[in-house]
Image (cartoon, rainbow over all chains, first blue to last red; front, side, top):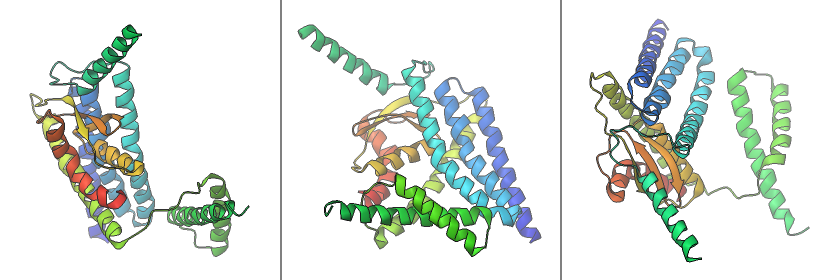
Length: 121
Length: 170
């Protein structure tokens, strides 16, 4: 029993370490998209481990924390995707280090096509 | 009337399944062991889900699909752990080694739910973030672009997940 509690505490500690690194990433990354990479998703593993660690420490709560993990894993990517999509459409620029932006390129192409069609009409 | 009867049957069946799942969640969440309580919860869940369920037939469950689903969950978890370490490694370095960009990848999946799970899996693994979906293509923000053309990026980001999802959802 004691061993399980110790194990749970260690798992939760590792989880909090990942949460810390996620927070550090928000401070250090150059633009919104890279911040989202660390801020919303490096925390995925952090939250999972923290919750499971608590579940192992208090074994009565394991089922509850497991359900929380399941909901977290299904909803987290939806909100990240919605945020990133909205940010790109709002025209928030990418950092200067960016190598390529295929989405913007394809959108420019489509806009050009639409313009040509409008001219032809 | 005769035309609607199979639909009604499917709806009732689906509502029944939803009610069972909700009941399991309720028991897991509250630890209630009173059977009378379960009955009330089940009837309530059944009646409420009867309003919302659609009369769509459930996909066939085969042993292969179940096995692949279990493997997929483990595969996804390992991918999440790996990429978390990868992003953590980048964050703690004095000069952040990133090479970000938005790449375009193509998917072979046909079913809507399969595509949704693929997009969510890509987003769930740090380092890649799906920004937009258009037809068969995903636009993915990648923290370390190593391959800019569609085929190469597809091979590196999507192929691993797709292999399993193709069997599970088609």
